[in-house]
Length: 230
Image 1 (tube, helix red, strand yellow):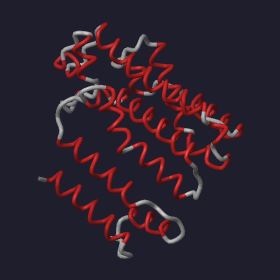
Image 2 (image 1 turned 180 degrees about the vertical axis):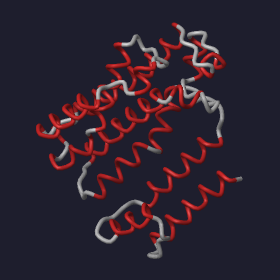
Image 3 (image 1 turned 45 degrees about the vertical axis):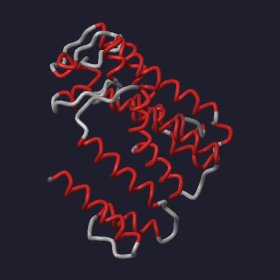
Image 4 (image 1 turned 90 degrees about the horizontal axis):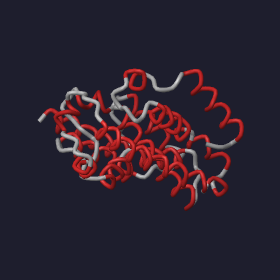
């Protein structure tokens, strides 16, 4: 009931913002300020809320990689598309690249949060891959590393990497001023590379705490920012 009330508040706050009466909340106030000069699709904001609500109430692990992408599509992808709208840039290829990067961000974040989610009784590793590699969800909840868990993590990681690769192939069609918004792809690629270096052990404490040196991450981000790439 408390969760339902929380999500209902966000739904009402978004509607009020578009009606010109945003509640006194810093996020809503900031978004309302952007709305005065830029078009932000209400559907995208509402979809983020409804996707998070559905996830909060659905305790089962996602059925497959497509389900992971569906979650990412309702969260990270919509957020990136809203950022493009707020900056007044974008075309069909840019939006396609945003979807690909958003999928990669969603998958990478869920991988990085495996221990955090397990401590709260949640598993985001796809059920079909777990069945294929004989992984028992109870072992994941206990934080037990195994060859099967590593193979599942590898499959998710490679799917995220493929999304980044496809997005980068679309880079020439993305306006230069929009490319900084795609920099999360750089962080994802670094974290996925670090996971591969640890043989896809999602329970490795060195990876779950940081995975990548903050300095190395910042240097990579600045390098791509200067080059106008991601």
